[in-house]
Length: 384
Image 1 (cartoon, rainbow, N blue to C red):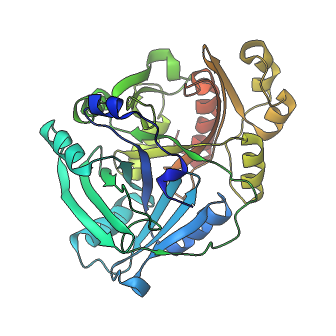
Image 2 (cartoon, rainbow, N blue to C red; image 1 turned 90 degrees about the horizontal axis):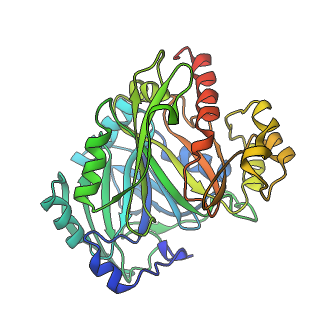
């Protein structure tokens, strides 16, 4: 399977020329983890992803081991440190020690990495890595990197004409286990960042200015509040809506919110969850649950009046109730969604599975039910 070309970009050249920071989509979600081999096995068996590439001591990488997994156009890169002998190795080792397993890089594919980097830096981005080339027999990739919230970065990836398994330095790898007959998900829908109190607007402004992203949605006040906790969120996106970044911050409330808990256990700002598009959320939930993935619970009472406000969906209410899938509807259509519990011991990173039918929303009608479910988990951990 080709790389990001599994979901080819169709944006006209004229539109690209008008966009000051054109993007082709998410290139990869890069995780820094304590044991990449075991993490790769987990995402293969539990999430149904396919291992496609590897870099490690066997092919010349002396300080890190990286496993590349794909599902459709969604790509995860799982990296752990073998021997931190360079600044990058030290950074990864210190990142895992400080934050636990987490997302270190939201890599974005761009048509011109040099131009994107120059524009971002000119408009206030902190440069991390100047543009450089990697080459092998499969072609050339241009990479550059800028900083965003916390210790998260955006690597800008230009891979036009490159047909290797991932990047130069990686070799093709056989699947760890045979993936399910049907994909559990197809693409990355959006990536959510949690930032400190009072800093949401700062980072929204960063994406507006540095990448030319526009504000897509805003949730404040009672939009995301329960009896005990609250948060605020704004969503920024590129002009094609292929890259969407909700930014959350805590709000003052009676008790500790999920954002406060994340910031405490992660040790600062970072990526909270990754939303993954699926074409069949029922099969996805059944397959992933059977493989051991734990999803948040939703009380039966949520479904008693669901049809009155959400209307008909392709999935019967009884099935939604059985699998604890949430529904939201807006003027454009509806969506089905469900959230996993955190996928590591720290209550930090988790995932969302989402099936869209016209709606480009984020489940506003489910916020109260979702956050009450998260509060029940917080209470079990003693963190509410």
